[in-house]
Image (cartoon, rainbow, N blue to C red; front, side, top):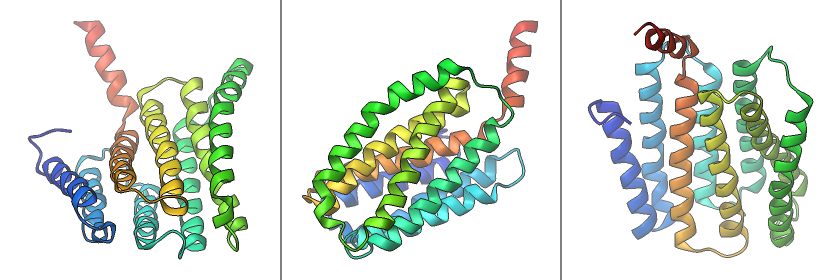
Length: 234
C-alpha cells in the first residue's frame, strides 16, 4: 500500500472501518461498509492497471461482493445461492491464473510436491465438512460443487507457485491460503458455532484476499524484466 495515493488511503480507511464494525457492531452492519472495500480496490485497479481491463477480475469482485452480502444475511438461509455465486467466483479465479501461466511446461516432481502438500488441506476440509454436515441438508449438492471449485482454486494456486515462483503466483497463493483459512472459519461460524471473533477474522482475511489478488492482477512481468536489466546495467 502506498500511503501517498488517495485510492490507497481510502481503501485503508474502509478496511479499518470494516474491522471496527465487525468488532463492535452487529454482523448485519457489515452490509453497509463491505461494498466500499470492493469499490476502492476496483478504483485502485482502474487507476494503476497497465494492461487492458480484465472483465474476469471485475466480474469476480462483483460476484464476490454479492456472495459476501448473502453470507452476512445468513449462510443457512442462502446456502444454495452462496454456493452458486462462489463456485462461479472460483472458476473466474482459476481462469485468471490459467491466463497468467499458460504455455509453460511442468515437471513430474511438481505434481508430486503439490499432491503431498494438498493432503493436509484435504484432510482439514474433510474434518470441517464432517462437523457441519448435518446443517447441509437440502443443499448438499450445491455445497459439494462449491467445495470442489474452492479446493481446485487453492490447489491450483499452489501448483502454479510450485511450478513457477514468480511474484504474481506468490500473491495468488497467499490469497488462496487466506481464503482457505477464511472458509473454514465461515463454515464453523455460520453452521456450527457463532462467535464475534470469527467474524473479525473473516473480515480481516477477506481484506487480505482483496489486496493480494489485486497485486496479482496488477503484476506486470515486463516491468520486472526491465528492472532486472536496469540492475544488471548499473
